[in-house]
Image (cartoon, rainbow, N blue to C red; front, side):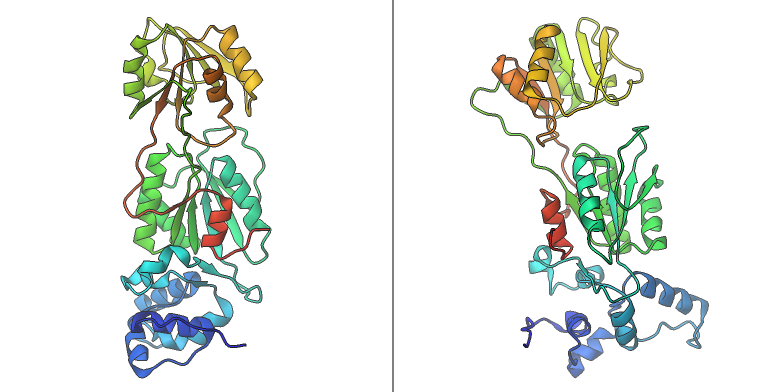
Length: 355
């Protein structure tokens, strides 16, 4: 059965021709000589050979069209390739086109790097490794000493900024980058966007939807932790602080408040002088949270808009007890970054069907 191919301009015609094994018109063939349609390892090897003057080319890179057959048999294609070279043909439909095309007969597996640390990142790694022909690496910041088991390969520690991440993407021949970090991990998200732009690796941000208040909620939204600390003078002195153990410094000057802090691991100073630390790992039920709020005589809850069901029980408990909640808004995403709300959305963007 024949396949209908949409009409595109010359820069993308060579890409579709390589993908579907179609002949190229003369004009498209001429334009394609300026478009490198190879992926990961093949593109890097060719550029290295060109730089060193190898393969008898005297420092001139080989014609991309000469690599179509070899690339087609041994390398996965990146369907967003045209965006890497500034061609606009696919831009209106870029978000609806998969980032990877995988042939299970090819010996080189496409490599997906997940920037993890969330429940969604763990679920995504498991879903991707269930697909033969996909290599998955999850990167963790290393702030938790005993992270749970993860499917696929795992690396721990920073990359050394955007430049270090870009170098890692090139050296490991990464074909797609998924930022599945916490919604408030704005630094790594910015680094991921810059590294993706520098290397041409397609990137998608996996972000669970934020929380929305109900009619009976007493929420006070603020734009930062500092603003949250400034607002606490309007409420009673006992504060249930759930912004994370790395964010206590913003409240360290509040000597007239008593803070209850819950964390998986002990927090480090600076922290408020009157702080009671509860070491516990969720998820927690509404009954758990209600009992805690009552036992510690909490006057106000402070939290980040992390979203998701795993940590939303405290909001329900606060609503039932008619307690005020200070909610820190999420930081904005870098310009031009697209997001999906769940693992299924990432699999669709990668051109994979969830199982």
